[in-house]
Amino acid sequence: MTTQATIQRWFEHAKGDYFNLYFAGLVFGGRPGESPQKVMSIQLTDPVLVVRFGSTERLTVTDPKGVKLVAANSLIIAEASDARFGWHYYGKPQLPENWCELIYRRQNSSVQVICLGPLSSGTEEFSYDGKAFVEIHKAGP
Image (cartoon, rainbow, N blue to C red; front, side, top):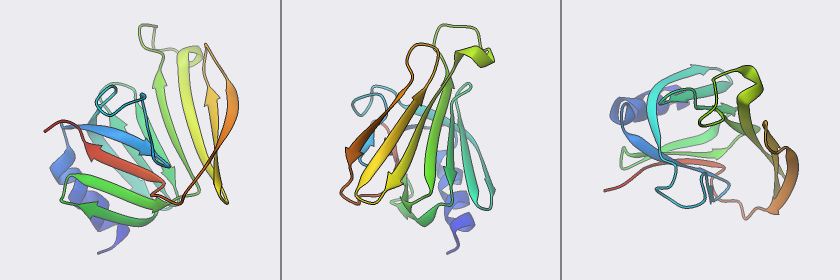
């Protein structure tokens, strides 16, 4: 199955449901279930996948490779050039100055995380054991 067909098949099952996002093994929001995202739409314009969630949240994956479905509920992206998750700062007006973004970039055996936003910006790096670069797993039962 092609990357596009795999992603489209996942979306058919995922639309309207809530999912936890994982980047290089780390869950967005701290722990599973703390920040699930409601899948609203997808766009795949080679080589970029964009998944839009509930309000303004957006996941952008550049050059996704090794894309597979697990039990029709989880989308696994083994490799990518980078992954970006962005949202408007919660509780603030949805203006450009309130946009937050986490950018994940693989660098050999580590992942660089760039944090952009109105409250904190900076870069950190953590070791990477080669797990799937992006995982989107259905939240809850």
